[in-house]
Image (cartoon, rainbow, N blue to C red; front, side, top):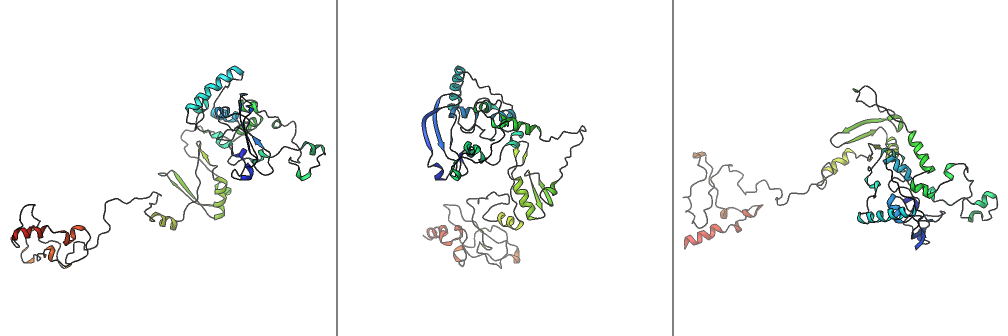
Length: 386
């Protein structure tokens, strides 16, 4: 679909001549009228238009213009062979209309994000399809046709001719004879036959007869991109780090392997690593851990406490006589008659600290340290005096 739309789908000039004709033509598969879109994918490109209706395209999960699979960009015959799907769409008029109505009902009941029918029940991926799929759009498909007058030597338009002035391909070439219905039904498609032959000639690795062999040999690593300095495998994170000796070798490996490494049906992620200095700064910056997750502060905790947040005399010992406040409703005892919390240690016992109201003001860290807010003692003392 991206190939049919062109390289720059946001260019306004490409869509100035685009047209939309409601029920303009009949679908080339089900022969029902549908809305036809026509546009120019780019400069010096031929106009493209939708060839099949949306129902037929959704049944096969293909583009309405080129009839290639939307996920892999491959013909339907190759896609069905790789996924082991045999979707027999009826070809007679009555059975085709009945089948299309049932599929429309199934499409309306689905969320529209996955294919319907047998294709929706097929496996999600295939190693063969991932290897044959194009990673970049093929824009040569949008080029104009060859000028037949130029082939005969009779074209007088010159550079203003909208068609290509090139020699045609061999007429005996199978790719020169393509049919839109054969591509849709997945039979006798010359492009699909060419891709399937390429897949059959791909090298295969057969397992040895000795069952005790569990080691794989991987060669040619240094000769492909450059000299490799270290290879580090992190089993816990299921990833690996490959360090090359030169920056040029690393750039070559990244360019040729990005979005192209496929193992067990999964496309591996290839990214650039980070330097040790940058990784150390990022791990402690703005509360972000080394693994990349942000560490949110725990709510309700105070900030960092000062060294002497109880406003104690630095010369006093850590063990002192501290009297507990009286329970509510009971008058406090006179000064000097309250039972000490800790027994004195003779002449080595430290002096008792002054009451909170008589202490010199210091740095207040908690609200309970503020003498102005501890008025319970003063209130009790006033009632005791009355």
